[in-house]
Image (tube, rainbow, N blue to C red):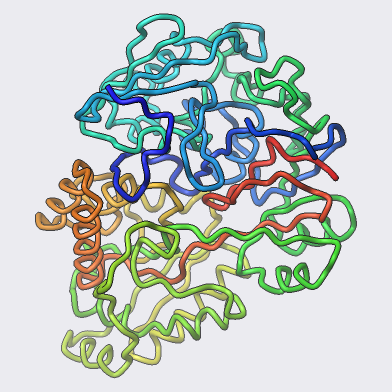
Length: 518
């Protein structure tokens, strides 16, 4: 057995854990010194979306806003520091078998849930078993399919038995996703359906109230990490409109808001305002669109390639993000350890695109799904013009954001937006998005060669071999034009200058669980 409290570097380890499809945070363990940190005060956070709840059986997976609140209410077994290293949280240490298929975690003693019940190995196993139980039909179960079972050795020792080797399991277990956070079994039993909006975890903050869409959490006086958290309370307020979020920051109604490059005017204004600080994180992954290869016209390779070759990503970035967004040419991005000298991307070539559509020999018309927001329409109109210039017609269908996921899973689309989120390891998403038979393989592809690459990469410990497989997989996906990438993932948060203690914005999630006010 090898002691593994140090980082299993993402450059030479595999893993598979697909957390939330729309958002993942690599939580920072609040275990460092607090020499300059001040206690007290209230922090108000402007969220992007309303929160559906925190019971995995009810909500399946957390979205970005859910992750942000979950980081305050719950703990995970591990966390990640600013460099991405796995660090202790509810688990003090961990060891692995030589084949990386068995991991043993030693748990922190003396920890209690908010309802006063003890945190222990039995609670860890109960959470896993509840999600995995087929009778519960939890959408979250797919994301832990790589774990065969969780075994209790004693109150403070738990063993994970995996189907395949996972060299990065501690890093993969860090985000406060619905799979990773530990719920109080006794609170779930006592509260039943009410638990979804009345959760109990071991986190640094306890739910005080949830009125309408406003969530108030207050400092946990019995938190296991002495001296933490720093704030008296945090108020989370959904503000779906970007301009309203920024206005709330300027007016003093909010102290910190989530944002992205599509609101580039707000970001530029904030950078010029000495009262504000713009926090930025360059992540792995990309903003993408999936093409349904099972329906016309995208069942023809020539059409798919033409659609991709008609896109001028630099012009698109300038039009919708003021040039802030960096074009993507593969599913990995600058924030990933996968670096490809040749990604096989189809270059912008409208003349070639017209030739391909002419060879297709039939009119090309299709419907693209976009969010029912001004942003969604702007993106759709830019793409619509690119494709019109090469002889293809797209009808824009705008839908509410929550309906995109079910439309995707039910394959009720021709072209649909998606995202490959920022994770420590590419395996969870690459396997889910592109392996034959996966419910998340939205293109509907069945390519044995691609399957072999993804299967080999997820169980190979050598970084060079894994990189070679992932680069070859990316080239094949590009050449087959199964999906296309628009921009790399860069995440933003805008805060008042007095807000301190924010970790990197992994997956665009703002973890304020250890923040403090200057």
